Figure 1 (tube, rainbow, N blue to C red):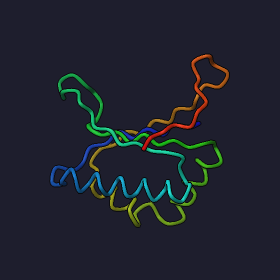
Figure 2: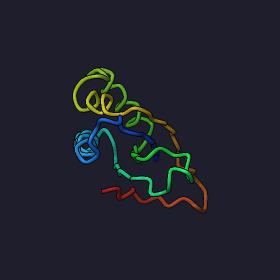
Figure 3: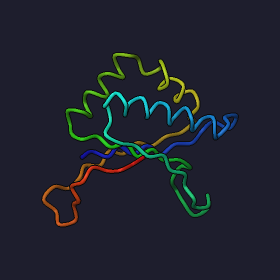
Figure 4: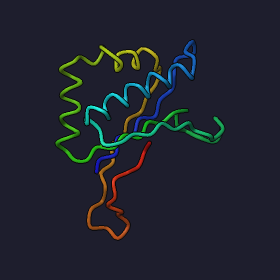
Length: 117
């Protein structure tokens, strides 16, 4: 399992609810097309003075390297500035991406699919 984490902030003139709806629509489209396994959107509840993280996080799960590579290839073929992905890019001012891979063979690994509804 691959966990693609995107922390982000919206531009100052962007309305939160509408923007989150666009991000959710984009990720929902990827999920329905089976380009991603699951996703979840989170809002940082820490005060700005006590956290280094950006206000929002998208947790995106990929089943394996093949799904991960195919999702990025498909987006590149469509164009990164087109469709819902393009709309998301116009709304976001800052973002940080980190990719984590599940540790296999570890006693701390739970093998069930994530339930990020």
